[in-house]
Amino acid sequence: MTDTSARPPEFLPKLFTVLREGYGWDDLRADVLAGLTVAIVALPLSMAIAIASGVGPERGLYTTIIGGFLVSALGGSRFQIGGPAGAFIVLVASCVMATGVEGLILATFLSGFMLIAVGVLRLGTYIKFIPYPVTVGFTAGIAVIIFTSQIKDLFGLTLSGPEPGEIVAKVEALWSVRGTVTWAALAVALATIALVVGVKRLRPGWPNMLIAVVVVSGLVVGLGLPVATIGTKFGALPRLPPAPALPVLTAEAIWAALPFAVSFTLLGAIESLLSAVVADGMSGRQHRSNAELVAQGAANIGSALFGGFCVTGTIARTATNVRAGSRGPVSGMLHALFVLGFMLLAAPLAAYIPLAALGGVLAVVAWNMAEKEEFWALVRSSKGDAMVVLVTFLLVVFRDLTEGIIVGFALGGLVFIRRMSDAAQVEPGEADAFPPDVAADQNRVTYRLRGPYFFGAAARLGSVLDRIADHPRAFVVDFSDVPFIDSTGARSFELLAHKVARKGGQLYLMGVRPDVRQSLLAQGATEPLVRFVSDARAVDSAEALR
Image 1 (cartoon, rainbow, N blue to C red):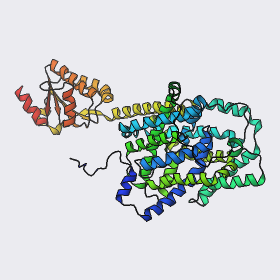
Image 2 (image 1 turned 60 degrees about the vertical axis):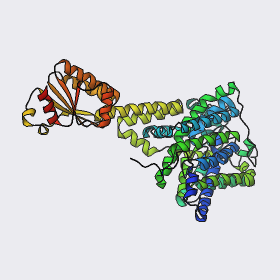
Image 3 (image 1 turned 90 degrees about the vertical axis):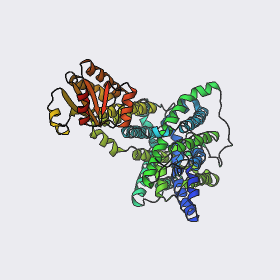
Image 4 (image 1 turned 30 degrees about the horizontal axis):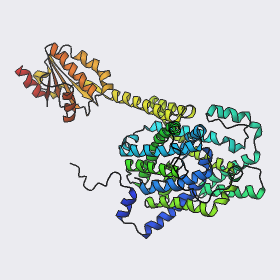
């Protein structure tokens, strides 16, 4: 029996665990450096993601400061970094187009309560079961959408109306204004991409994205290049987040925001737990799924109260935190405070950042998150995996992110059922397992089942067993290699026992495990209709008594 007396509470934040283990000055110094490193990465990304999502850059900073602090303070992962994520760009932009910024804040607020409910109901354990081809497919699809959302700023294109959200209409609209290319903006974008990639290769430990944005912004100001900047489009950034305020909570507003809140909840749960799993793999630690979801919910509520939008665990920033030597959640909390310090001291400088530079940063982010090698490996690995990853990818790109995840998950389940059904086998029992006189008796046959016997296997093997059961007086089925049987499989054996009995025979089930036997009994496969025996000699004894 497993001792659970020393197991920490399921919803206890990792911050308390780390402090209880002993937290000293050396740990704090390591967390300060890790937090500063992550903040340097988060600064340009937060603003770029917010702009790409259709809101002002300041809202990305609010999300990082409030949401990032709460995720680290309350979360179930030692190293999780929360904030705005590229995966949400499409959903957030769609929400803004449909409901406005107020509707986005309300959807984020509602999503927070939904995430808390998911965590309290302990559903986090099941969310981690999303098939790998689904995660690769939807991540690659998001990468394509992020890149297409940046084409306008990368090329400095000018549209006469709002940019369409649907990808085909977007590309058509952008192509129709290809003559409005601003070559200075394209040069800025290419220079940013070159700097991000070059610094990463030459000095992997340096903050390549921040360096690229600072250098390119300085060149734009120094050369007086005619490109759009944060200042020309959004004005000066505020130096502090706004005072907390509840979103508009009318019935009409809630009804309009509800579908987006559900989508934020689904994607946020998946993205945050995937990020926590990545951190576990890098650090050798173990996160608490349900505590993490509750923290994500609290962070989304907090973000909405301060004018931010949806928060989730961010894989790239979390990985940066681990590599920077973080000792625990304090580094994530400090990263949020460092971003707040930037707003207090240097917010006016952000007005000089070119939009093309942020577009270049997101283009690199999209390229890195596409998981190209993993995508093509799955396409080549098997027909089932190829179907799941391609269908998920195409649905995410051309239909809807949530639809892609749901359909991909369903297809992944069907592929799994098919593979498990194929793994289940029925084969003749070994003759040397029985006494010689019994083995030669033609009125008795023995077959061995291998693998889990569930509804998929029952549909495939049930007819085979029915044909075998047509003649023998004693029909023995060896269950020694059956680890699991579901209600459908158990019911099929109850029907098989009736068929054998009608023909004057007896069904013997040999080597049945206790949990498998309990499932069989629950579906009516009870004695004397079915005889449960331990080995072949017990079958001989039972036959002698009949």
